[in-house]
Length: 294
Image (spheres, rainbow, N blue to C red):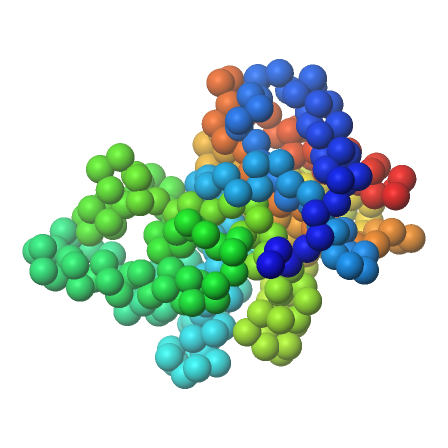
């Protein structure tokens, strides 16, 4: 069963917003965006556009590593340490790829390095798939087809990581906006791993408003250029954003005064022209206005 109730009225709003998006950003084709929108009414209501489309998730995959590492810690499958704590925090707060590498190595017992012999590589490959197998075991229909076993990188994978991702990157990470929305919902609802773990994750995902400028804190700013940029200072924001080259994604839980909370996950794919940092803030503004009109 879906974890939220599909709502025809919300679906209509999504399509109207997308019409405005394509008018404002004609370089963005209709197959280069996917989103899922949830409103925390009773029952939980939502709508999607290409919500089951598998897409490279950029740094949003780090949400899945966050949940997995806390589950591993709860089960005693990895040892708690100050260095792992630091990596978990940096992975989410600053979106550090180096920190993510340490977390994935801790989860799977694998390391990056030169290419391996075939038998050694098959053993390594099986170990690296531990995180995938964990999420498959949850049997959420929203997780169908996802892949969350690759480290994030800046310049590309090398050695055994390159062999693992495939000649044409065909085995790279893949997520849907519905899968991200489901996982984020579990965190927000205190259902992910444990109530205590969910509270800890929300602390890492909490973002300060208004956002600082890129000139203040650099390219890894998790608000500027994303869904949180247009929010009023009285809003509550939990979010995880990701970007690579021309691709920008975001997942955000937003609470406004006098409105029910809502969750928005947006993926974009490579447009035909230069990336436009105004795209996700524009989308966020349209949903902000839609919520105020609910």
